[in-house]
Length: 363
Image 1 (cartoon, helix red, strand yellow):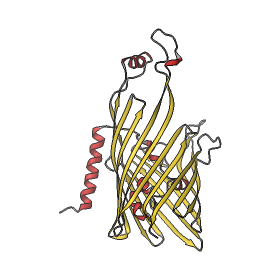
Image 2 (cartoon, helix red, strand yellow):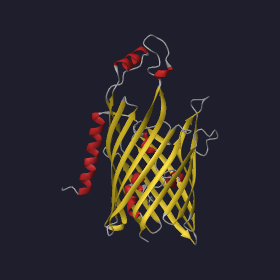
Image 3 (cartoon, helix red, strand yellow):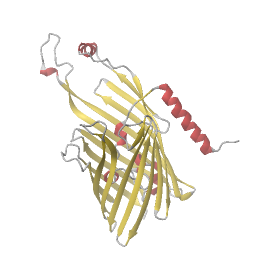
Image 4 (cartoon, helix red, strand yellow):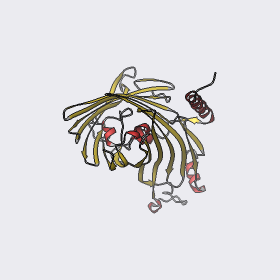
């Protein structure tokens, strides 16, 4: 029996994923790419895979790029994470390629970094004295470049898209890694309903690490009973995100409600449903708009089973809420989100700001 194009693609993905697991050690890797971009999406806890329709679709679901209501669009985001320790920055721009097919191409750049880290490996001089002049600073940063393309498939109700992504991670001047991977996605819209699917790292994403340490630095590692790092390879396994949404309007009010489920082959003990090689993490987001100018948003996610500190056999269910708001002012859209609202200490709250700018709006 002759295989269809779709069947060949499925077989190719399965073969590539199996080969990836056999070739290298699987680890939790590239976690900075699981944070997400755009304050609008963060306000709904990332529950946007079925409805995302702006430049941030290049990250969440590239198929959504076909819904952009402009011939050229740009966007940017800044956020402080972990109480301001880490900075997360994002910028993207894209252009419509074909009006009839809805084809759209985009380029997204992401950086997450911790800067001004004291480098104390040379704090103690060879003669045993402490010399604070030997303290320098370095940065630990992760970078990603996503090249995206999307188009309608047959009917304008169905869109497909994909990413080619290049990853660079660096720790000062003594450690760096390069990675390469693919994402694919699809969206289907009909009346007041939308469905979406996104597969990240569809063929698995490899990170190849290399290290550059001086003999003196290696001596310090050995004297302090630390392992000297060696070149290695990390793999990010495929992750499937499915979403369904309902949206509509009543007079001057428009609304949307979307549920997503993140299915990962990296099992976690704390997931709402998990095993050794499987975890399922649901999220829920909603948005209400007034006169298509002012929007309020809310979302929940990061649903986990937390082990009781005093009784290890008992667990409690923990849910993280996010909230947000947005303003549409002609060709510009400004959004804000507050992540981890339930953190009473304030140490884990994150303020997220983003902007999207349209050029040559279509209607």
